[in-house]
Amino acid sequence: MNTMKRLIRISLALALLAGATPLATFAAPPPPPPPSDADVDAGPPLPDWEHLSAQQRELLIAPIRQRWNDSPQQRRRMFEHAQRWQSMTPEQRERARKGARRYEDMSPQQREEARVLFERMRALPPEQRKALRDRWEAMTPQQRDAWIKANASQETRPAPGSR
Image 1: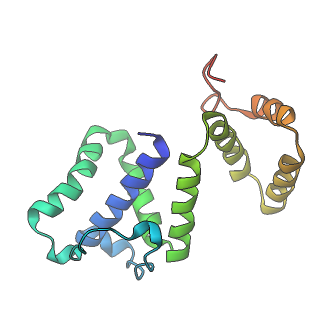
Image 2: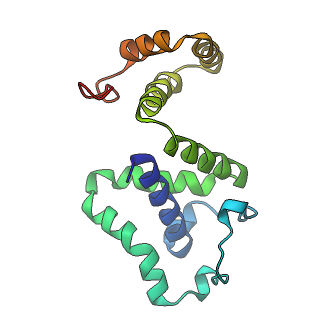
């Protein structure tokens, strides 16, 4: 399972968990977003959390519990991600979901570019982000490859022969 998809699943599960535990005291959950076409199930509707059986709740929480227990070094990040998800508006959550779906549909090269661009842009002030975005859009594929190679950090740098 790719990293972005895993992060989203962790976030969603932790967000569910936050609503049923003392974690909910950190942020009141916003009203649920209206269901999009992608969110509508074909089967009968399932009950809200309070009406799920203990077995159904356990089925939903077990993967998160396993990840939490298996990765003590990731717990703070997971917890902060769940808090951030709880504080998002429905529109922000939908944008995050759309971005995750777009990332999942990318080729490995496009993902690499996205990671490097994200790392560079996140440290820039808004006006410099816009300038970099405009420059990026004007670049040829060869110029983009050269920029990626020049700006990739050790964490985002591809393994030899992966391109």
